[in-house]
Image (cartoon, rainbow, N blue to C red; front, top):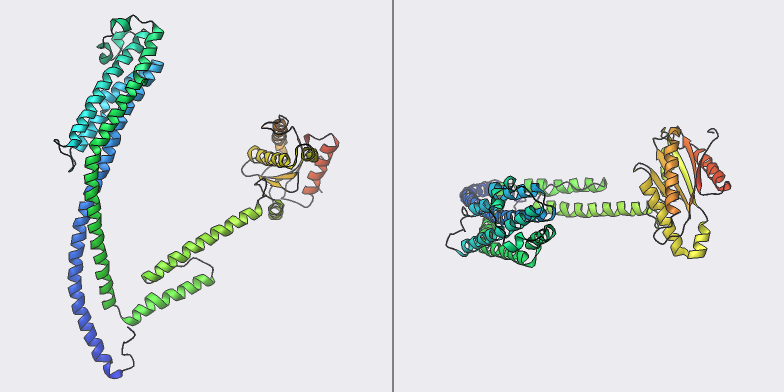
Length: 461
């Protein structure tokens, strides 16, 4: 492209015209190849779709066969344990009406890889035979459970009525019949039979699924080859039919201008231009999103208390400033851990940290999702509750009592301790005196002996 004779006037017209004729002729030839390739892709795509549907059908049929068998097992076991007739009805609903196993086999017979004289068919027949043999055991178990509960046999399904108990089993008492009914469907022999059915199904489907998967992979590989060829032909046609200046301007210069603007504006790049630029934009955007996520994570860490995971003092002050300008009713709770120094001195700082984490956990689970708990000092906490007024004092009081009740139990190795809570309200956002009013309420609680709560009783300043 760099050899384009732009600086040779005598060659401009002729060479451009000749190049255009050649490109048109080449484009026509290439267009025929593209049409042929599209036809091949369409055919290969249809084959791939059919083989994919066969593959999915195999998996679905396998699941249905196992599901049908498992439903029978589940219902007979529930009936053996509870003798609830609804489980017997569900059992025969599956066996006689839904017939998932039989329907799955019929679906498999429609697949190209299925042949009645193949290993697939033989193992499927074995699976059905074993399943039907197992049904005899299941019916016998239901008959035992039914007689143990003294059900009227005329009211039971015909299949249970037709089961004849051995003389030895008929002579068993009710408890022994129940136990034997359960042993029949929970015992090792039953589990071995279930395993055999599962193995038979696995063997039967393995062959057909392998054949289908091989065909699918072959078709996918051929389709990929056709697509690659199609991409090459389209790319060549594109190059031959687009002027060099247009190529540079639209696919290189313009994207660069767009990217520069996006970078200056600190935005993700627009996906535009040539493939390489699109790839570059996608890569840049991935890094951009990763950096944004990292910044968000760092910002979140900066706003969280490292020990307790709730807001730290800095985040609390930011929220306080934000709420100062919002004329919404709110409540401020200032919370101190009573005798926290004694906990540290007596049990160690590790136990003290556990106590602080427990308090933070209680605050997060006791208050609403819309409330804002924070750790504002060593053993000092705060909660900002928005959209709440003094009519909610009983609710806040109940929360305070619940937290102290839990902490005074001393669960999970923690010593018994309590909280002192001062509460103040504001009708017009976080005003300048709210913190002082809550602190005065907290002081009165401490003066009264701690382990409690108190509401500010004066007037707002």
